[in-house]
Image (cartoon, rainbow, N blue to C red):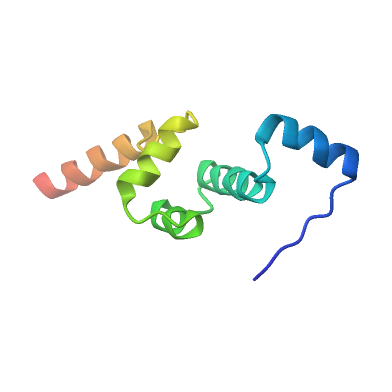
Length: 87
């Protein structure tokens, strides 16, 4: 699916001053980050969406943007799973 976003010229120029000329990539990355934070997309989907070959590239991307790829919720889930396996 292709998605087109129409920006007024003055806003496009302003964004180019801050983001450079690859506005579409920046918009895609922003969407990907927000979807990952909201747990709409998982790590594998994020990798495919952004065209990364490895999960380590995804981890680097998330780290670069200050998004933890392993959260306290993940830790608690892992602890719960471990307790169930110990029974």
